[in-house]
Length: 359
Ligand SMILES: [Zn+2]
Ligand SMILES: [Zn+2]
Image 1: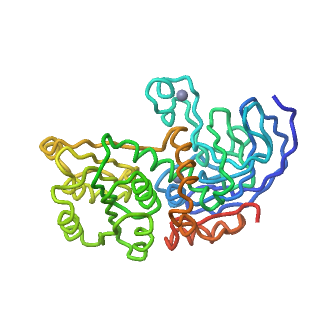
Image 2 (image 1 turned 180 degrees about the vertical axis):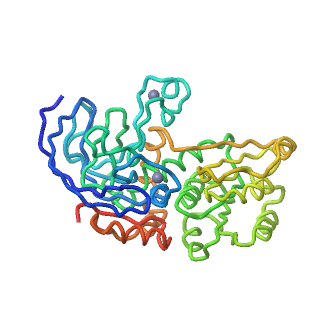
Image 3 (image 1 turned 180 degrees about the horizontal axis):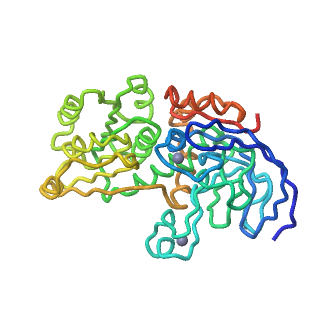
């Protein structure tokens, strides 16, 4: 255990739906327990789930510091072999105990009995520095840290610990090597899926997207964009190209009406991997008969485990030159301008809007 030291921090506090954020600061003495670290946030990105919280589609204990996608530099650390002050790192969005059945037997530490998620915790927990819309975050001992290689700049690295690691998990769920894949949704999760599949060597990747402005980037991320505004036409367009259907479909659009389309697009025995529909308005209109007669598998993927984050960073290290990751993220807003940044994020001109708390 280290001696207590005085740390200054500034952060944006979320007080609930419809209430303004308050920009606050404090100087506090923090004594790190073994395995803990304090990290200076150098860039955070606004994830869709933060927008859901701000809009009231999901509920958090308030007051809290939102934000979980970020990259930072260690400013203090205790008992973490291999890591030191000054290292640039990313970390798992979940802290897990390492002892419960989910951690040990199920291979799902992201479903730990004692799960703690950054950016979703009340400020009354621990030091209160639990989110990334802050100059400093307090990392717990059950959180996996990964060093960010020097060549990966902050805007490429920031979304790795939510969006990219989740898609590494999703893509790793396919049981056999797929030849024909459909990605439903060309947002950040979608283009990451395309890039991961492209790197694997999947020859046919189709990405359904309603926003034509995204088609160029979808192409650059290795997929053929398909206009999804007319669902029937889009389905036919893909079936004309891939015959009896896709081996795997990734759902990252979060739109329940698209499930029927997905089932139609799957070949017999195909796999449907659901990622985006993680909200209450997700009752599906397919029948068990459709699932059974087509012998399809449906798999849900929520968050990820430490090894997926390791692979996400390794993937970026191999591919930062191969895909235009930097084009996905806006120039940074200062932390005091969080309201403007949120307005910009809602416009969806960028795949992610970024905040630099050190500006
Ligand atoms: Zn997220
Ligand atoms: Zn656990």
